[in-house]
Length: 322
Image 1 (cartoon, one colour):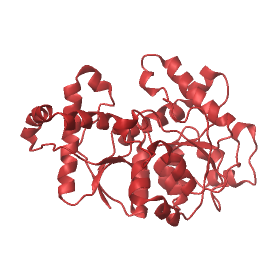
Image 2 (image 1 turned 135 degrees about the vertical axis):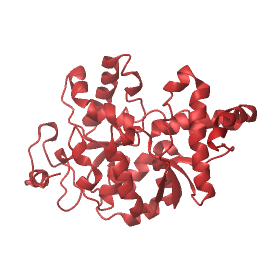
Image 3 (image 1 turned 180 degrees about the horizontal axis):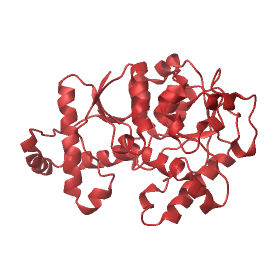
Image 4 (image 1 turned 90 degrees about the horizontal axis):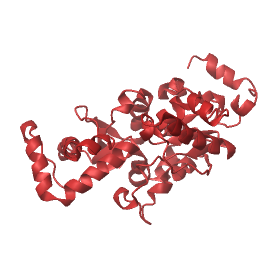
């Protein structure tokens, strides 16, 4: 499968381990990435608050670039950020439903030789795993099952609402896909209250304490449900749940110690890639606190929630330099 690949800005800035893990995992899934390296930020909903036309034009430009790659043999457009998915879906809905407006936006794009035509298929990596590759195929590729690993899914807001725009239907229950993927990789799905709620990132510059309280509450709920780690398809969620976790601990008044993995990292581990190849050493809360890498991916090993290291395997993994 050949995809016009939109990595987004966060994965090439704050979370380069996400961009890198996608590049490492793609060949194992028989995905050829054609990166839209000249594409710009989606605006993440923020630009639209000031200028809807500007946000729509920026995204129409990305869609037009993707359509050029599709005309050259790509199957569809793929993104790796659920916030991007939400912002792009909203813009695409406006553009596709109003030809006069779309023509007006295309006038702005014309000097670049670009024009967006109604109807592009743009799928988040999560959707592509389930709908294009398929869970049976994914299971067949697993080399290191996530045996006994208790994983809490964290969707974030933009990829589950509004349901009509995001395409959640009985045929495509996209608000359950993370759980389906975790199970296909051999892991155990942990249900907890915050899995489909906002991480708090969108308000962090307006009310830092409220933002950190949201993140800390979700992390605490997952810990109380006995999750070993969380996985998310959104790098902005990852920033608030991992990077900001030490501050969130202070706000909620308790230790959290909850590793948060990007979705391609979790997939890569199950497909046999090593932690260092997937950039796990970059995380603030180190996944080695719960996972033994020596034979299979096994939970219950480490220093999580006051436990002691079992069998020396975590120490050995850490000593390995990643």
